[in-house]
Image (tube, rainbow, N blue to C red; front, top):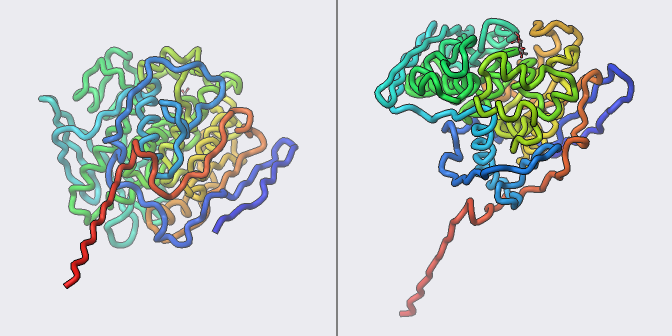
Length: 432
Ligand code: MCU
């Protein structure tokens, strides 16, 4: 079934653009794409990064490979996504290393511990666990920081909460050449990887522990992540960089979060140099792009696309231009094109249609979509379609930002570079 409602784009300020997403709506919850079983499904994809990329004032085409060819099949997305991941690591976030040699830990009804060792170095961190009512094992939402996320609604919906202190893994307030925290104890204080990728690595290691914990308390295949503001930047990167995460829910993330880098200067959001300089959230390599976002080979619509086809619920505040809500809406609309091409248009929600202008306020408007997203992607009891609800106060226009079209991707085998399956059947008939 394809749901296609008309776009009500009203021209006066304060209008809300509501789009019922157009991707094929799965007929039943059983057809929903599950989160992947591994952190990176494209780990084996060969990627040769270009030495340089031409300047581009528009958003890079998510469907065009580094070698200039366009993907034609849904199955081609796996390795195209890996290209985007590698480009994003190289220019935006810094490298997020895979699973270390040893990861051990424990899960109890009140606490989760992680011990990591790699190349002769080791580190540990822990996080408080809160269970909802009822009997486990429970889906779980990793909540970064202590504010902005509606943990009461999350628990009422039936999911557990892990209170993750990202600073234990990547501290703020340190200079770039002396980064601290459990990540940097392993990879070094001069690692060029930024805090968002380090926080991301921390969540991946918590999922490693949940996977090996016996599965009686928390479910490793029903993990969500959320956080507001700087922790919204974190939630966004965390969901993009681990395909085991079933539901990604950044809130009011601002510059270095959802907003397209290319739109930030024009919108008057927190400048790229301010966000880069305030904390080492982004990788050190981003320093070359703060005055030249057009030089980036990726933009955040492709970070949205890295989450596809998994559940994504981006919450934003249209009342604070410093957060770049227009630019965030463009990222959502651009990334939604990849969701649609994958037949998962109903799995993304962008919602900036809210009244309270306070940053990280607890908002009545988000309670129902929050519950619906938890039911759909974590509990697997619901199947509500995603929604694009962009406040007319901060509505970006994707058409202005792209010069590419969205392909119809086939369900069949992809290009030979990504799929090589040859079946030869020989039938021998012997006549007696
Ligand atoms: C929106 O996130 C950040 C913002 O980028 C910073 O400039 C400001 O200092 O803090 C915001 C935040 O995390 O607020 C809680």
